[in-house]
Length: 284
Image (spheres, one colour):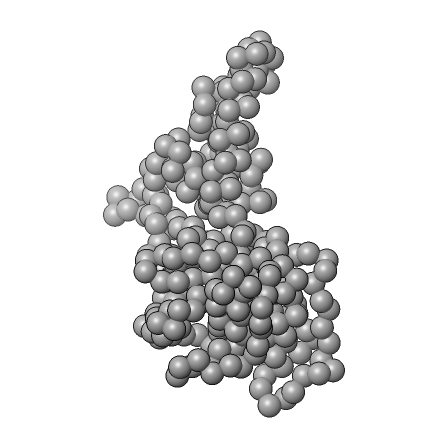
């Protein structure tokens, strides 16, 4: 996050509403103008039947509301509220409180449950959901994004064989930073939405993976003898995992390698059993 972001204290907090809600509203009220050409910005403004947490009017006339959600919201309510703002010609940016019942953190995790509203936001925001964590101590984690790749569970067949199956209820999460609070307005599935200019973490992983694979092929072409000496069995899955694991986690790497047609679901055991990492060749 940009160092220009304003540090906030509790001095001006009104205790008529929760401290974290006020801190988050003030965070966006103070910092959105630093990254956007703003004509007007207000808090707690009535729009039709709703009270918008933060209302923004850009110099180009576009209008945005930031909806800060602390308690869990149902998917129908999320869609209805988005529609109501859209009917007023207003774009909507949803931010979930990661310190509340959503219980999200700015880090990679596995085997988590996500709500129906998070699944819907993940679709609307093209592979990301935005969170911010705040408490009485202040802003604990400025706005960040989480991507939710599929989680695979180890199962045992009736014949006693192990296999992996995509979970219907659990996901992994992959953290990505927000480089600035510059707003990006767009329409998706008929909804007028606002997001930031952060990169889609899966697309970013795909780009990095392709560059890495291309570099390996180029190395094989230019220095075949050295490539054969260093990688006698070709580019093994374990080398890719070692390269990208800390940044993207196993589940996004598996998703990307399947997207690029290097792996299938049947190869899951090579991905999730560490002792098999170096038994699967990706490029000969």
